[in-house]
Structure formats: structure tokens, C-alpha cells
Length: 285
Image (cartoon, rainbow, N blue to C red; front, side):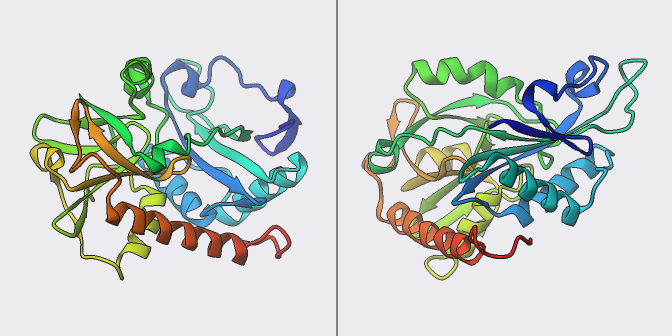
């Protein structure tokens, strides 16, 4: 991955720099999006662009380009880097600030990032999650505030976990880098408010609606611990079954039938999306 876009220019990585006064660096005042590139196609790009604009609005930042121009930048960057697979991050910062506090003109960076998908065994045997009491500030915005997730990553790895899931002692919200869903008595449940509106989750719910009832509502911590099946969704992990919470198995500790059905339905949906917007098709959102 040789090229990065920054403030209107596509540059080699070594030339893509920001001044140290940027509020994204000084105060963590920034929003971002990350999405996969598969078969040369930016996956669910239109949804990510919409959420990017929403996150920016919540932080009162104005992107220098609208969705159509941003889509053009993304596609041009994919072409420049000859990307067939990987990831792309769009980052909008608070800009340069003389007093290290007041936002200035936002800086826009679009850059390719290598992606290492989770091991196949996590989809065949299921993954483990650990729990942590935390609630993100402005949870509906995809900000760069990943302090808790980054700090706990070492602990999660040491315990053989694939993710940290947040709760407030009574209600469960989301994972540090994923959306959370559970199945109980044949009903798919996921939180709707107080969480990031996950793009992969959105598409999973779309393919799940013909298969089983869906409830978008708060999830109690106790309910999670007694779920029949648990799923995480995200751009990199896509749809992943969870078979262990801390030291407790989920259900019978095996990947359940609904997880298998939903993973299959999502994969077919993804393949159809990629086929429709294939690398040889006209470049448009």
C-alpha cells in the first residue's frame, strides 16, 4: 500500500503528514470510518459514507467533500494502490489549533490499511468475549476514542478472547470494535440506542428478517449470560459466533444453528453485493 490521500492530494505514505497542532492528535478530537475492500470493491461504501457524515455532524466537523466526492476519492485510491483486498480508513480530525483546544479546518485523510481476518477456527468453534464496565462518550459517533479497547486488548489476548464487550452493570451495549447480537428462544435481539449503528449489523439484520423475529431494544447483562447464541459483527470479523463469555459457555458451548444460518445468509448477501459492484463494473456509489 504505497499511496494515501490527504487534504486533496494523493501522496506516497512517507509524504503524508500532519502538523503536531492537530486536535486529532492533541485531544483525540476526530471521527473515522473503516471498511473492507474485497475483489477491488469497497464493501458497503454508501453506508459508511452516510455514517461518516453523521459522526462528523455530532462532533460539529464539516468534511471538505460530500459523499459523491468522497466515494470518488476512495475508488481512485483503490486504483492507485492496485488494491484487490485490504481495508481503508477515512479520518476527519479537528484540524490545526493554535490554543490546542479550539477546532480549526478539519483535516481529511483516506488511507489503505492491511487486514488480517480472524482465524477460521473462530467461525467453526466460536470465539470468547470478556466483559468490562464502560460506556463510550457519544456512542452514536465513530470517534477515535478507543482508549479502553486498546488498553484492554492485551488482557483479552491473554485470556484467549476475541473481544471486550461493554456494560454498565445492568445493560450491555457493544463490543470495543463490534456490534453485539444474541438469540433467545428463536428471536434475534440487538441494542438500537446508545450504541454505534454498525454497518455489518445493519446488513445482517436485513438478511435475518425473513428468517426469524428481530427485536431492537436494550439487552440486560443477565439476558446476555443466558442467551442461546451470541454473535458479533464488524467490518473485519463480519459475522462471528461467540460460544464463551468469560468462563461461562454460551448455550451448549457450540456454534448454534441460527449462527450458522445467519453467517451463510450474510455471506450470500455479501457475494451478491460484490458481484453487483464488481471491479469491472462502472465505478459509482
